[in-house]
Length: 511
Image (cartoon, rainbow, N blue to C red; front, side, top):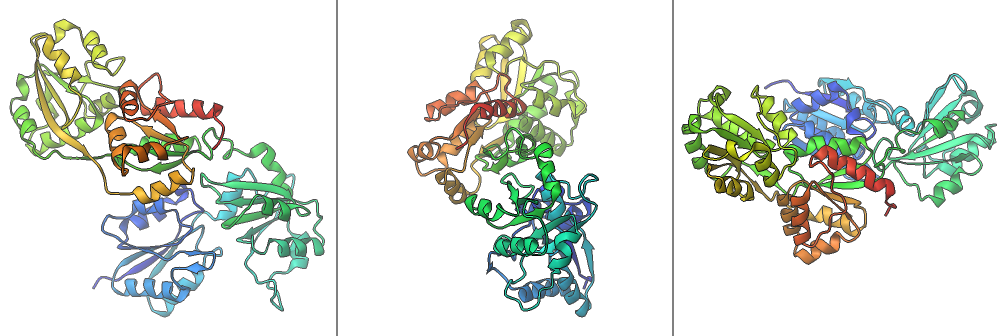
């Protein structure tokens, strides 16, 4: 049996982009991923599809597993010869009980490695615009547990020394004990006017920061209903936030935006929204899969040299076309002599990434604009191949046929409704947590509406939610189904759609 190993991995404080390269690599090769409440579930995307996932989260006293049970899980899986990724929020050796788990593995004679993570103390403060050290304010910082029971006879925290002996104090998970923490600091000499910041869900789109002083922070935190998980920073460096607050000032910060695009194509669009500060909620209304039959595409590929034009209407079409081309023992050299039309810039990029030149990209992605841009003489009497989705609009091929072209439609993929994620999404819609839903094609609108029990339910859930459409065709479908778009970019691309959302929410009040 192969020897197992446990990687104790720091998941960082919440932003999945803060996972280390080594941490992501260890998750990717793991047979088992054991993860905490504070580890962002998005990090599980690094895991293999066949990897076992075990949630062992602890939240406000509601523990799915005791620490002893967690220890036993990682020991048992490692003894089975498996690679175990033990994913822990922040850094495993800073209030993460990573040392205790490592000791269990040592006692069991098992192999382990520690993969440090970005601790919440550093990251949450940085995302709140607070440098923990600053030449003008302090040269020392301390990390302190906020969990210590105030009723203990003897404290492990030397309040008399840290209150005035260290410039910046960072308390982990101290909301419940905040009044006692503040009282001890003031009692032992820290001035009541000392600046304080409390950061909840640091580095995540839902980050909230409340600032005050030792004298008033307890009342401010209570008024703001601040709850765990939160971090408390005490010290003059908190004053830097007024100038350095970069994360919470991004244009879409705090906005929750649903992306209905197929998961395979959603990443770039989601990244644009996230970089602008949005919390992106992936709720794919379509899934892109191979067609039920390759017959029409195979027939077209068999006589590929007979075509004058090949028209790609989407990035998906390019991908499936080339995949099938290669499966039949062909390659891009078989496109020699054909003129290539790509409906939009992203589709053109996908084609040219293959080393194939695109001969025409229309300024507008509508049939009328395509016909006008190509010119009737380049269509009349030509043999045109359109590899596309199984179900698609017939406007473009019909217009080409009217000009005397011979048009072949070859099915190379289809869009279907993915697995049901309605319940979780419904709760967020009904709670009024969703700011916008984005639609990047007519099929995303149709499938989104069809996911609910009725069109009326879809319209009810979307009441007060911004409908963002990529272009006029998608907007027309939305209106037909009772959804009125209020965001539509001048250019029909996801980048332009993200920009239009930024402009829209710059004017819109928060829900």
